[in-house]
Image 1: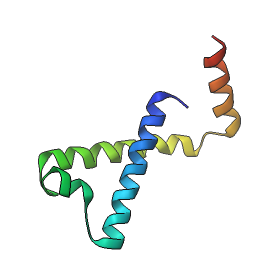
Image 2: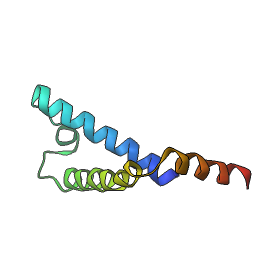
Image 3: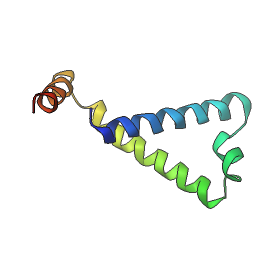
Image 4: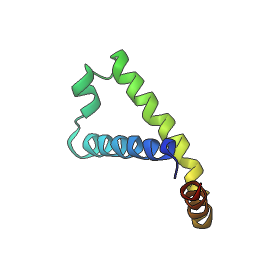
Amino acid sequence: MTALQKTALVLTIIGAINWGLIGFFQWDLVAAIFGGQDAALSRIIYGVVGIAGLINIGMLFMSPKERTSDQHVRTNH
């Protein structure tokens, strides 16, 4: 897994936690921290988390063999 994929995965997890908070408690953590859903910084964060989710789609179609061979190549060079 590349650094980009790991970063995207972390951002996707943060987004999932935020959606869980919205679903269970009707509380948007991103909006609470960054000034509401309409604030520019909140919208940027929502966008970055969305892009991270799109990056993770590629991992969905990657076989376990591809993931391990990719790590093996990087550690041996």
